[in-house]
Image 1 (cartoon, rainbow, N blue to C red):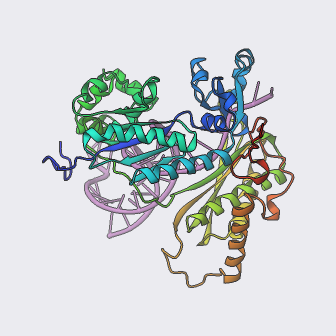
Image 2: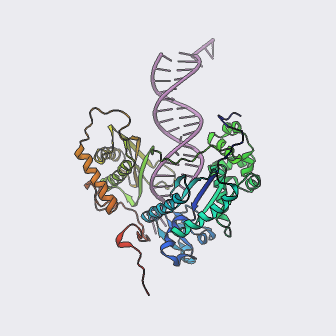
Image 3: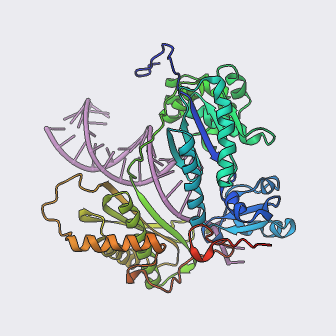
Length: 435
DNA sequence: TCTGGGGTCCTAGGACCC
DNA sequence: TCTGGGGTCCTAGGACCC
């Protein structure tokens, strides 16, 4: 085995990672504003009220699995009086910013990994101080934001993930667990392979067939062996379980390589005008995201999907790619391109569709890349778009939009049980009644 | 009736070139 | 009997994550 530049001499400050994540995040957000939900089984559904995406511990105890379609739970929801919420991303995003903001004040180097998780660089802490620091962190975040969190610590990101998993399982504990040289082998031997970060269903099955059922057994395999049988990703995971850090903390936000916006419709759609509205709306949304990272894109892919669950299985995905003459961040360029793409697509496949979306690719920072001698972007147009972005930031998404985005929204999915935008909309603020 | 949305990385194999 | 060979780039698809 050969690992590039691995420094095997003992270091003064061996790296130490933390993983902080919010418990049952979307459910916890709802509970902050409706404390009566606290002991009840609660679930939050995905867009279009499709699948379960967050469960309270009570709901987990009822054996409700992540990702099950809501319609399969109807009887159980009634029988067990389960509280159901449509997803409310305005609320969850805002609560996420509060958690991350609090965290940034308490822990210096952090990498926001997802809406409800962040990695921390805890290198340099004295081992004795680490646990009390962690316990204090967990307590403070909950006090400041109302969101319960847990923290795992270890000498690699993968070990911190394992530790966090254990911290969360231990309901009586402090919400903190640390893996160190003393307990590592024992902990990993108890840890199922399919729960390791980076190992999904498919690989878990293959590893089981090779007699690897827990994390310790995987950590004992060599890099070349695993690379040959699987790939570099899995081989790196084994090293990380041994305590050799492969993944670093990424404190600087990287430019996205693709930006996708897509939605399922409330019903099957056949008419071109509705599809056009949906595609225009998604395009405008995608370009706004593009602008928010000060980037330009050169291609847009339009896709339409029929019902992917119909039996027998048949093709359901159709797409087409349009390349712009020059990279742009102007919504109007992309609306034109998107409409052109949709027209082609719809003409060749006039079917009943369930979902539509757009993907931007070949993204680069604005001003970098090719020098554009023939740019048509005039300063006036740029200023107009900036005003539009500002209005939408201040008054809410979609306040100001292009006519092609439409107003009938016949294609919108349902969200029957959406809670209010407690924190992001003046008219929906929670009301405190004095007694 | 009914089944989410948004990402990344890796690899194999084909296209193409010399 | 006998198809060239090697390098690079691109893409599709599969795997994973939350």
